[in-house]
Image (cartoon, rainbow, N blue to C red; front, side):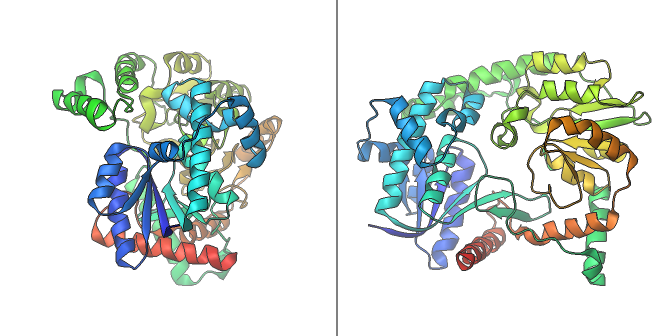
Length: 456
């Protein structure tokens, strides 16, 4: 039995492997024993070159000689053991992303469960660390760690410069968030949050980058050669190259067609803002599956608007060409709906809106910086603290919209919450391999683990 202070989960992206290998080096320097669970041969190579012990999930399945004879029976056993509604639901995010069939994904989940169970039973593990995502392996590792009472830390997004959220599970709740009272803040703390708000409004920095991923016109011969080499010689045909280039082709067609659907905003008219989620994002596929078909949410909200109001709808800037043409056309044909160009700044749209409606988007958090009424339909880290209008049942949405348009927001309460959220985040940046950042993030993760262990 090997002992590990930290096990890092490394998914197929080469950049992630490089980051975790560099991060692992800082943990090793701090005297911790580090290991890795990997999911690609590229990741194996990067981790191996750093001299770390690693375990590829496919190798673990072979090593433990795991065989599945009856998928239905094993699904029932795992659903009962881990209190899951269904394995089919657990694999849904990956189905959305890669368009694979349920039986194939359910078999993969079963194999992963049994392999990870054996692994954590045979090794003494103090903590497992990974970043946000909804791939099957990520979700399985989290479920098994929870069942075995192994502390688990997600390195997640935090909407502040040079900060991350360190969470214990795949939900978006921040367990470190304790609400401050505005009047109890010192003058320096009040000035800090005022400066943070002013800086946010001035820079108009977006938390999401504009979608600039590959289309046919940006695929160089070098990229194709690298992909072919990886497909045949590194990943041994396990690399989803066919799916990748199918998506490249589809995205290219959509890029041409979408320009005829989007419109420019008229910031002088009355409107309510509803941002769309990326259709394959875990915000929808995991944390709000009831809103996966977002076009029906758009249609419903549009019916609830008072006369004279428009509903401004904007696709997620980091996933413009992941939406289907059928879905966007459906939204654009609704009479009082304006489908905005993705490159339009959310800051301008928020600032001139009367209300913002979100499922669990960070746009809702951005809107608090402008003291706008925010209606929240799903689960988010900023829900439930008295600074948003939280809708538990959709039939309440009519009243929520009316309330948002009539009531003033409590600016002091919002400022106190923004300060509380900042204090609940941790120093560091995911993906940055600069020595300064790696040193800071290492300390944050260690401190977070010590806090978890102290509270147990």
